[in-house]
Image (tube, rainbow, N blue to C red; front, side, top):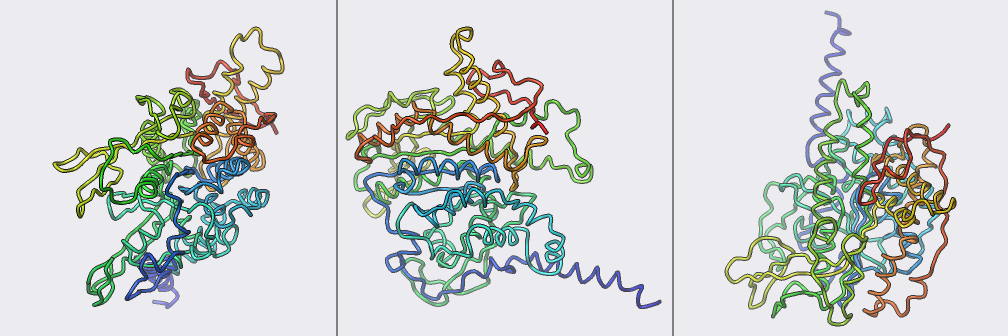
Length: 550
């Protein structure tokens, strides 16, 4: 047989071998980010490994940035920019980011008050998906090397946003940055890129981890991107008080992917961190309610629960490639994300939650400003305290207490800023329809159009959405959505201002309560029906399919 006839078989064998090699868990640049340390530095010796200086213990302001691809990245960046005008972001204790939200949160964490907002906006128009998945050269590289799709995403994020900066490069001032991921090796446990996790679980320094690696891991959507593998190190024949004495045996690994699978809102991490920062890990006496210190949570939510209504007009939603590999796996994952989101919103006092009056010792009864049906609420998270060395170690836990354990609650206030709420702002213009003047009717219609355009922007790592809508139009809609929700929703914003002023978190509310005039942009949109009557009872849009005019 001619040698050339063997060429295809040889090539196939080589590619197969490379493919198997690429799947080995300890191959890849992310896996070699850290080196084995025989004696890891202790917490007190590694302030930068703690990411920043310790947060103040007299109050906690947490900002959660949800997942949702480029839609979430742009909406989160726009929201941070607006909140920064009030000095709220730089004064926050922590930013918790998931997937697209982590993209914007990581950038702000790196630059802080020096953030060039117009520059960030231009960078967030990048087609991260196309530069990662669709490049033929990348496919070849993945077949012949140990590079993964998530490795390429990390490289693109570095080139566009993070410039290979690591956690060591994060500034000491400003909020700490908490990127969220999900552990595929531990039953879907939520994992936070933090000093505590890397030193306490992986026995590895976080200082050397690239921000791009953390963000790419948080955005590694199942079915599109690969999990990222980290090695769990064990010190060899050494005794470290934090770790104990262990022998260096066969390596073990954790495999992390999209943080949305554990909590797509990013709020659970803030509950944990708030409890630790406000009250410490151990308490001598456990009060029945942990409400003596202010706890504020701002949830920036890029979720669009009604976007699936677009498919109701389709008898067959499959695209040509779907006949080979159907993408309904994404629908299944989105459904799980949405369910977890609803559960956490209920815990924060939104949706069908029961509201208790919360009276803070230092702030008076402000809960009346945070009422059901509004965008702000008073909430209480279950906390379980277990006996530990003569004290009680407390953590967020919904489990029933065992003998000797004490159940209490972490109480605070939340402001929920969600894309899907835009149309509900039109309700303020809906009363007495026949008496509303033409200008108000036009503004009302513009709000409904804006909501539909923003919510129908897809959750890809690329600005794509309704037919004929360019990335510039979609980004303009997302930025305008954030501005409308934060500036025009004065009821929610002023309630938060009152709370912060009463708690002496701000000296005055002049800036916080400044009234803004923001014209809702008019987008050239076509649709079967753009009437205001297509709002649900809670003000959310039915979200009929739209398209941009050519």
